[in-house]
Amino acid sequence: KSFSDEDSLINKFSPLNDYAYYKWLFDKWIIKNKIQNKVTGFRFSNIWGPGESHKGEMASIVYKCYNEIKKTGSAKLFKYGEQERDFLYIKDCVDIIDWFIQNPKICGIYNIGSGVSNSFKEIVEEIFVVLNMPNKIEYINMPKILVKTYQNYTKLDLIKLREIGYDKQFSDYKDYIKDYVLNYLEKNIYV
Image 1 (cartoon, one colour):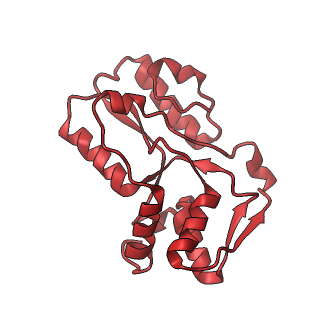
Image 2: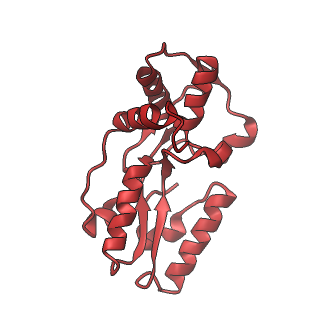
């Protein structure tokens, strides 16, 4: 429920699922043992792009909905596609990691995201635009088993990343959807 990477806020976090809980425990351990000046850790947002087919159900909405649209001509979203995520295209993620490799003395725990939140509806509508297809979205109910643990919103705070000198700006999500769909998914390259 908190998207800051400030060490002092670690105990205010409320992980919503086991995956998040175990990542949180590790961050707490790093901070409790005061070794954040000896390690570099990353809290990745929703990374998406070429090479994610192996993720299965955890693949990005772009990958899953692209395949659904190509197969059926439509896409399904939980009502009403208003869930939002901080999506980071893999090319930006690689640039950030490379920057840390080039600056090995920088340590700590950092959020790795775009710092922007986009709705699932926006993302899927853009896939239809790129494919030059009519927008056909079917809204379905969220399964009750997910309601309590589903994250409806993420937007990472990138203040620490910017303060240490990472100043590259990220491209618009529409540009990245176009790149991913036309240069990779449509060509079946690095899927």
